[in-house]
Image (cartoon, rainbow, N blue to C red):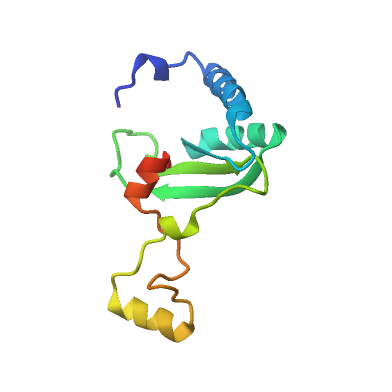
Amino acid sequence: MKKTKWDIFKSHKDFLYFTFKWIDALIPTLKETGSLYIFNTPFNCAYILQFLVDKGLIFQNWVTWDKRDGLGTSKTKYSNGQESILFFTKSEKHIFNYDEIRVPYESTERIEHASKKGILKNGKDGSLMIKEDYAAKSGIL
């Protein structure tokens, strides 16, 4: 995979320094109702998660985005088939547009089952599937 100049670091320590620096610049700009989504590898997210907790942000979710790209080019280890998304908020009063990101089921069997179980609301069940158009507009994807 070819990387651009801004995405090349001499060491993992340099990467974390760069990452923590832009996060520190971003935190003061978040509204009290604001949310923060950070996409990265599971390995890097472990470091970033602890940094955000130490900064006083509120951990909401660690979302796993399944993005199978095949086995990749590595001959010595498995390739990541996922990307991690850390979801943090500045306060418990954050805005979460739940109904805007749920996707209605297309499967008639699934709709029938959800109706029988009483979990169908306005043609949608309680499952969370992020609409790609909404996610792109809001910066999630």
